[in-house]
Length: 490
Image 1 (cartoon, helix red, strand yellow):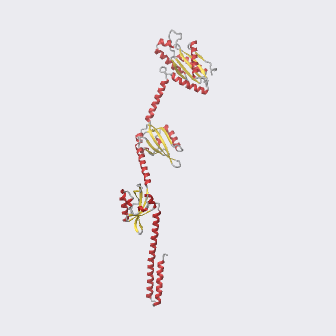
Image 2: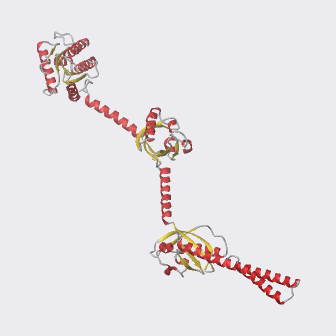
Image 3: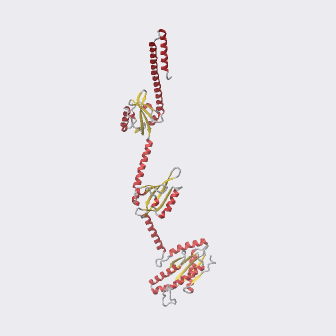
């Protein structure tokens, strides 16, 4: 009980006083003596009770300390008189050794030599009552020669009634590895972003630059501070705004990657072409957090591609054009007639062809000379081409003084109308003939054919038929044209 000593001695003093009262006469002095004796007895009892209280409390505290040391989820050692006197099970697991192999050794036995000064200074500060830093990091060896990164904290305690140091340990090897890896990655990413010639940017969902790499100075002549926080729409070419707006809108929903080319404004107001690869960054809820974009200046490439396209177009034009007359050549005619034949066949439409020959051209050429003959061919070729009004109509030099006209989706009547215009326009050129001939100016003879393409016919049938009609026209009379009746051939 809490008051056992005080109560016991107090009542004992009363009993002694009563016994004495029976053998002596009660006086004031005897009463004072009995009261003093009772007070002294009560004080001795209080001292006894306190001693018992603190003894029990110490036993409870030591028991609790033992439980903490033994059952702690963290590795713990107790260091006393320059040696390890206690380790818990977690510490045994940490260094992969049993307590019997550890207890009695110096704590320095487990610590790498370069960290011995840190440990010694910490132990000295604790023994002198100085407050040590909250935590310190060092490296320890396991029995399997594995080096661990350890974070320690320590404090002074009483262990087995003697001063000791309690050391809590935490294995931070994995954490340090991750931090080191993260540091290396950050340094690598920083090196890449700060030294790459590509433009690396982070764009917020509202289109504002959250980050842009220093290469913006070389590429756009803007400093980072001039662009960060500004909206990218301020720098886009007006024709690119709708495209980029659509891409950002799609990124806000489900688009994760996009690659596209667009124009962007430099500080001097000019525009360059850049190729951008953009990838979205999303939160766990799939909500768009931002867009990382890597852009490269492709202005030179675009210009080269444009020149290449122009060159290819020029080469194609040259390869498809008759060098003398400037209209399509026989090679281009062979490609075009097959395309038009297939299209009219699919649509079951009539297809007309006109074969043309310049009358008495050999005599004209012999009499006037080759230069005059070449000029005559050029003027007639231009007239034939200019007479055709529909985009789908086609004129080509077939060979020598022969020309061919393709009229897809044109029936016999339409072909006759075109043939009449061709003959009239050539007459209007008023190219003088040789004096001995009956005709005063150069004229042409024409053969027309119209077919409806089907599985039984081929394109050569149309050209052959038109050529036969041209022969008939030349045989009958010059400056005439002849037609086939196509209905029975279709």
